[in-house]
Image (cartoon, rainbow, N blue to C red; front, side):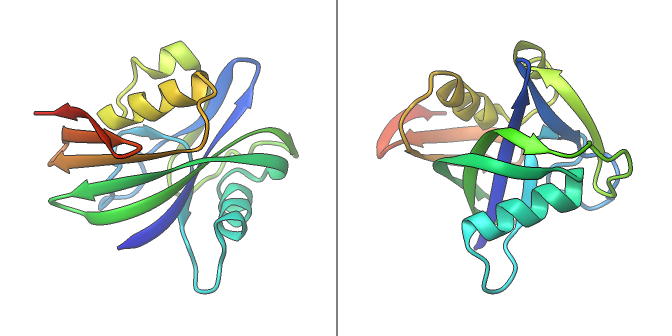
Length: 158
C-alpha cells in the first residue's frame, strides 16, 4: 500500500494539471492528473504535498485545504491512499521542465473531456460542490472503474 498526495491548484477557473507522457512505466501514462506523488519516509501529508508541488511545478503553496482521502484499489497497481488537497494561494512561476510530464492550466469543464481516470470525475465534482471532507474508494480492473464508495455508501458497482 502506498500513501500519496494530489493537489488541484486553481487559478482563474482552471486547474494546473500534468499530462503524464514522459515515463515509460507509469500507471497514469497519457492521463491528465493533478500535482502530487509518493510520501517519503517520515513525511506527513502536508510535508509530501509541499515538497511534491515545489519539485513538480516550482510553486510554493502559501495555504491549502485537505479535502479528502481517496482509496484506489487496482488489480494491476495495488492499493493507494491518496490525500487530496486544493489550493489557490501560491507564489512563484510554473516551471517548464518537469521530468514526469507536461504542465498546463486546464479549464475545469475542459478537463472532463481529457483522458483522466473515470473516478477522478467523482472527486472533481465533490471539489466543485465544496463537499465536506470525504472518503472515496475507487476500485479498478485495468483502466475500468468497477466500484465507487463514498463515505461508506456504494455509489457505483459494475
